[in-house]
Amino acid sequence: MKAVYEKPKSLTDVVTHYCPGCTHGVAHRLVAEVIDDLKLEDRAVGIASVGCSVFAYDYFEVDFQQAAHGRAPAVATGIKRVHPDSVVFTYQGDGDLASIGAAEIVHAAMRGENITVVFINNAIYGMTGGQMAPTTLVGQKASTSPAGRDPDHSGSPIRVCEMLSTLPGVAYLARVSCHDARGIMSAKRSIGKAFQTQLDGEGFALVEILSNCPTNWGMSPVESLEWVKEHMVRYYPLGEFCTPGEGE
Amino acid sequence: MSDLQLFKGNEAVGEAAVRAGCRHFFGYPITPQNELPEYMSWRLPEVGGVFLQAESEVAAINMVYGAGGAGAKAMTSSSSPGISLKQEGISFLAGAEIPGVIVNMVRGGPGLGGIQPAQSDYFQATRGGGHGDYRTVVLGPASLQELVDMTYEAFQIADRYRNPVMVVGDGVMGQMMEPVVFPDMAEVTDPPDWATTGKRGRDNFNLINSLYLDPEELWEHNRKLNDKYRQMTEKEVRWETRATDDADFAFVAYGTTARIVQKAVEQMREDGHAVGLVRPQTLWPFPQEPFDELSDRVDGFRTVEMSLGQMVEDVRLAVQGRVPVQFYGTTGGVMPDYRDIISAMEEMMRKVGGRR
Ligand SMILES: Cc1ncc(C[n+]2csc(CCOP(=O)(O)OP(=O)(O)O)c2C)c(N)n1
Ligand code: SF4
Image 1 (cartoon, rainbow over the protein chains, first blue to last red):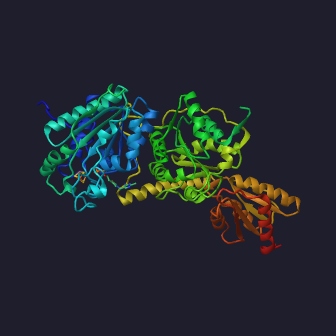
Image 2 (cartoon, chains in turn blue, purple; image 1 turned 90 degrees about the horizontal axis):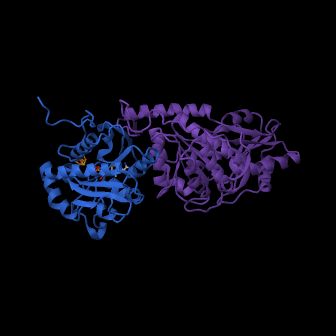
């Protein structure tokens, strides 16, 4: 019999701790498929951030470092500057990347650090129980914005790709969504390009993946994907914001 | 053997680090240590290394974390406010067992404080500074030659224990010039087998991590760390005594202050007073032995620091009430005058009196 669907080689057999229906699992699979496709398992070094994906180091069959909250791009910089021939990627949530780690991501991008960033935007702090994130949509309820995010009080959400796209050091920037099969296929293409950008030595690459958090959004998995499509994609337009060679 | 060379303190640290095999430096500007990153910015590329100016001290220490975890001898330097910012990172280095060297050219605090020399970061350096049950070896040089030697050794100690090591100087030490001899250039070694280099044919994957959600597992991890701290306490502790053989009273001082106290000791000896000096060279582990030895013989200790009194707490713990321990200090960036130090000791001698 011919196998038509298999677990990527770069994923371990460990059962993940993600909630049912959470797209963190989908994003992991896509990253692992790209590592397999590009044959990077011997050169890849991942950086797990602080958030629901902190245990990413248990799920990928590659070297990993776990970084302090928000500091993954700095840790990645240290690794990449020591081993320029390794393929270094961070996997970060929106609290990690766009709030506490805002300085680190901006400056890694400014330096054109030759790393790949997988950025999971689920518009909430998942791991700590659903507090407001810098990406939480206006009106969206969170445990620290019980009446919904009020822009007069908390400002309006950060669009990370648009913000970083002004920096000449950035080689590849894309926003994709995991809410349906088409989105997932497009996400895989973008993740592939983001790793290829690093292999080609083009500079900083980031893929923002619009994701769900059924647990803290208080929705079923299906409802949550619907919500990504209806609300998140509207505020966070999908597409490529930079491609290699463009910025110079 | 190299020759004597006239060097500025901050630059001497840089050259000593290069000699030790350090090829990666990450830092952020702050007075009074700027000559060190400036030196590294041209010196490291010369030897095939990397200097990178980070966006903050927070980023710099996390770059050290990444580079050290990838198997490099990496370092960062700063002065007091910047060292405060590095504390979370230092705790992560200790927890994840990553070697790394951190230099603090201490200035007056708290807050933005001043830019003149101080020793008021002693608590921060020796008590962990960051969160959790951890320790760092803290070296306190008193001359530029010792600064060079200790910087060189800091990398060896860091590698030996897979633990961060701190070198604590002050503004005077960073700025002054003295002739020094540098150790020969160490060979740059391959990354150790635990480093995250990418698997490169290895069967297992390497992990650098400090997260243990299971309390029993974390306790076990901390027990393992504690074994290392115990070994450091036994093997890395260093001190020097001057003129203590027949001393009735002894000063305790480290770093730049110890140099000034040394002058006070010489003057007092000339005037016929039997005083000596205990100079801790490691601030952690703190030397217990000289205090066990001297507490039976001297009538008291006078600790002198450029602070409101920090190391004096360790001296009291070491002396354990056997004889009086008193403090004299200047703070805010003011250096103590050796004449005031003499007056302080004379006053103690009058009040405490001789037991014999
Ligand atoms: C310095 C520090 N501050 C706060 C925390 C607590 N904390 C852990 S995870 C997290 C939020 C993570 O949210 P996000 O990055 O959006 O990832 P998600 O869990 O949603 O995947 C916070 C605030 C921490 N570990 N360290
Ligand atoms: S809390 Fe949210 S983000 Fe975290 S695993 Fe559960 S669903 Fe996913």
